[in-house]
Structure formats: C-alpha cells, structure tokens
Length: 101
Image 1 (tube, rainbow, N blue to C red):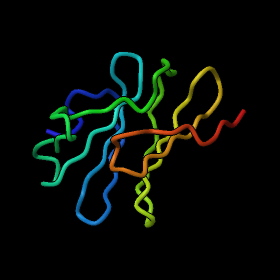
Image 2: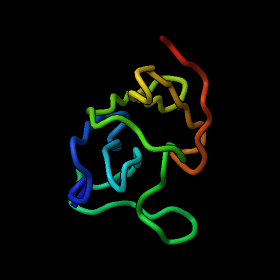
Image 3: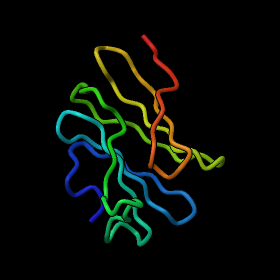
Image 4: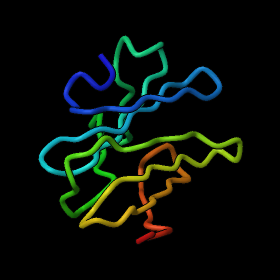
C-alpha cells in the first residue's frame, strides 16, 4: 500500500496517479501508485521508493504537489530552513531548487 512505510506522509494526485512524500530513516522519501494506492509503482531498478533528500530532515511533515507541467515538488524542513526539491522524471531523480530562511 502506498506510504505504508512512511511516517507523516503527505499524498497528492495528478491525472489518476498518486504521489507520496514522507519520513523514513531520518530523510524524506517519495513513492507513487498507478492504482489508487493499493500498491506502489516500481522505479526502473525495481525499487518502490526513492530518497528525495540525502541529508537528514527535521521531524515535520513534508509537503508535496504535482504540477501541471509534470514536475513534482516536495518541501521539507532542514536545519530550520525550508528546502524545496523538484523531480521532472516521476521521482527518479531529485534536485534542490530553493532554500528559504
């Protein structure tokens, strides 16, 4: 089931796909589903989750939004700053695009 292994997960939907961002192992992880959350969709390597961040994050719920452009944006708190990450390939790779004090 989508996000069943993530703490404080946030879920959003776009074009029938569900996307989740939540906490595990001190980092933010991303998962997605093509069937309403019943199962997680695999990435090309067969795994079902991808780390959004390589650094540990504060223990707060991340925010996630799937944009009309196809990009997925995740914001999370790290060291008292809000960091925003974006993926343009369904969560395969993540890029830091903003830091707000």
